[in-house]
Length: 383
Image 1: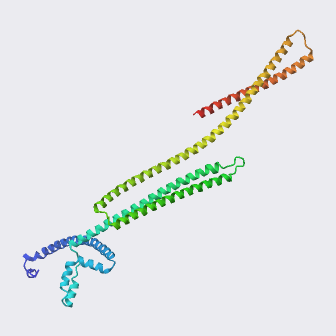
Image 2 (image 1 turned 180 degrees about the vertical axis):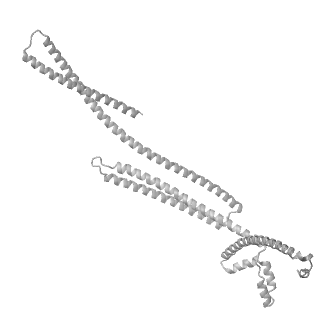
């Protein structure tokens, strides 16, 4: 750069400044690219440092909470920076200027070992938190399952009580004459329910007393073992833990099987209630059909009686008609008045005959319909 002004008079070096300008532009372009790369690298480093700072802050906060004071957190920081603090302790005997220099040279980064140790402790803490969360979630899930099971049981009991109340009180306690519910049956039903509740309470009290006695017995046995010094060894304790896990697994399987059985029982009760309702409807329909069959049989008997009566009257009329025809064929000539009288009687008898024939046809039609209805009813009952 210093030799350039000296070469202005020289024609050979007259183009040298142009070449230098091109080289400067190229170097400027390369510098921009390098700056962009450096900025991206610095951003990545800042992100990594931000993550490390968050991890360090969590570690310091957890350590401070565990130590229940700020002094313990300062000790943790001093433990992390122990190599630097040793150098600071060596410089404590110097003057104020040295103290200012020492304060200016505080550590701003951690070593790889310290980062590794903090990361391991954070991973362990997160693992413990995850395990604790899993245990809490499992406990909450068990509680919710127990509540659902209790709700199903209560629902089944309420449905059963409602069905029994409808069967025994709403339908069974109704007076057929007045249509009102009889108070005696309602009182008896309530007394029976109260007796069942008292029996259940006594049963639960006895179970509670038995559980209390077993707990007291186990506490006394544990206390006696502690007093006599008969403590469990590690192997025995490990064996008991294994057995406990096996028993817990068996209990869970039994509880799952019991839950399945209860679900099946609930479905069976639901199906049984549906079948009972269907049976009640079919019983009512069968009773209605029986009453209708009785009415049809009575109507058929009456129709058959009318048919027999009509046939008898028809036979009497036929005989009378035959007799009259025989008299008409005799050589004796009747009188005109007798002829007119007999003709009027003939017309009247023929009208009666037509009426009875019409009645017989109607009765036969009704009898055919009744027989067809009886046959269809008997076929439906057989099906």
